[in-house]
Length: 366
Image (cartoon, rainbow, N blue to C red):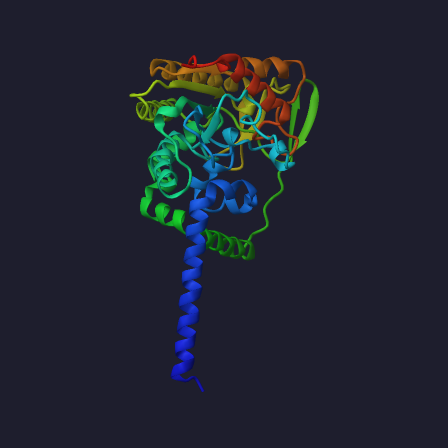
């Protein structure tokens, strides 16, 4: 029989469990700069995106003398690709460029320019206020934006039309303070999704590059070939607006603004066929395109992005020439597992381009 005493005991057990769980979340939030780098990636990527700032560099012990470099971008900035899939600790571009301080990353996989700006506005305040991570904006010596030609403009249009994950700001803030609840929510959603998962059609895509044939299980990304000129220019104007907003955050400080341009995979290879199938975002999974159109759209997009960035006072670094130079020699810079991102050689070349553009002391020490 359930007595009053039993009810009272159950109440206190439940209350203590709840308080302990809340305490655990509070401890995690405060010490997250130390904890994130030792936790499984599956946990880090499925809680508040703000915590990903601590995934790429040790930011638990920033001193007043440290030079800081802020980075915005998408999955290319975060290092997605073969190295990450193979658990290489030196994956991605941030582990390959010359280091002159600490890197604070606000770009996330799948982000357009709008989300990059909003991520900084929201997360910079949260992690500076509620974790042991602290820095002064006067320590920032450079602000870097990694633009990826493959889908950044499409992401801009999507975020402008449908909003970003930051559109529900209150929910985003709540998620920051309950990471363990957030992770359990993700695992439950994943379980339900897998339970109802439908069989997906296996993609077999054959591409011919420099007289070599590659059979891959995806369609490669391209320079927004599906967009008409009006939508393309609209996406470029969104880029202009929010890149300018990012720059204005630091207008009262002596900060060097840097733009790194990364072309799409389709833009850096010479295909043997006049027409190829590439990824479709509007009518998945693929569309057939003329390879001459790829080159024309790449040139137009690149020239527009570089001009916009330069007009806004950003130093520009285009990796296209260095990448194409290598593919013309027969080197493959993407795949074999992930053709949407660089492999080790691709990241090495992009990092070398970055260093050739920017690797120098920004200011002389006092």
